[in-house]
Image (cartoon, rainbow, N blue to C red; front, side, top):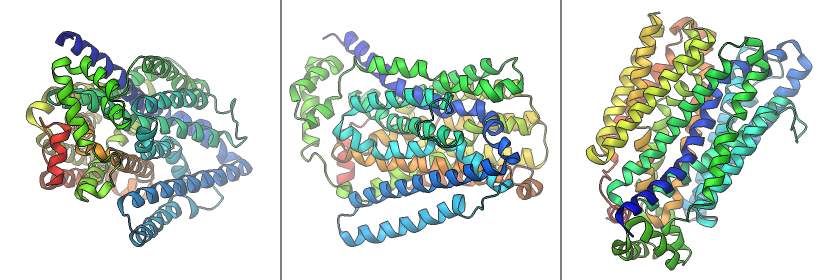
Length: 533
């Protein structure tokens, strides 16, 4: 097959897979335009209805506790894969269980049955970030799904979940199949969508990495991050035009529903397109379908290179499902901390709460959403810079430079609030922060996660993705608790949280400098040899 045709075919496969990233961005960012409306619709009425408030509080606690028990079960399953011996599995399971209990007690159990400022902030924060529970679940089971259903079928499952979530989140009171309070119903549908996001967050870059030639793999995997940011930008525009010129009462009752329902359009397109793409060659080899794998490789790399690439794949898959510690613990630690730092630098505070942040600065609703569009444009533009440079400059330099840039920007943003500087100062620091993230830890982290795990333990990527979403949940839930706290606001004028994220940026730079190897220009099989050494 001609190289040009191979390039077109590869581009079409990449485009389809990146729709999973687009929906990832769309689903996680759609909430940004509805944060205030969700509080007005679901929580404010409870302040005047003690009976309804008590019911919501009880269900909120149940949903939270059950969610974290399920998460603990997933953590235990990871521990069993990491530590073969029963003794170590029991010890680390108990330690993780104790940490989960402390977290559950702090977020849910310590609160009474009467609404107060603290409980309102926790419920609102958990409602906004409830999809992240599903993301943790989806990311955790992504390895199992990729191994047993395949990369393609896993993405199809994600597309179906996106559709269900979009409809259910828009009308949780109309299709409340559990018969619970409407707030609980909304949370359940957001969790369902989150499972789809978690699956897509792992399977889309994995699919692209497994079909991409080594010399352009970083660029193609980075397109998934471009799609994530593009999905966010699209939904920022959708939210803006839904809200433009509308009365606040309409937005609080009807407008937010249209925001969530709009996701059904890209989700339907993603589901349809997936039926026309093949499974990845590496998964086909895992399933002993070498002829099918060779057929796909012929279309991707051309007939001259296909047999050699197939031989390399077969050589790296001698053991189909090796223990996750087969290549040592460092690779697991690096994968987890790449994910943790990507979230602990605070990016999703900006992406989820941007309108609320601009509201703090005194902007009107339509101005808030317009300024959020500016954030999205900067995010997208600098993601393009990362795509153009990740295979030229390498992964490590971009990550270190970006982490330092984020630390400086978050320090400045915190002082902008603390000192009461004009709103334009805070906007500039926020845009510098987003640019620093978009050129580094946004796309490059996903490139590294898709690259560093050897083929025979590719399922271990699931623990890194799960860690990412758990970190996202912690950051997104705790931000309203810090930002809306009367005590912290009086002391730091809403600047406290941003200084925490600045410290995380410094730690992220040190982590990259000391521990993470460069992966630029190496095949997935070459990278496996690095870990064997």
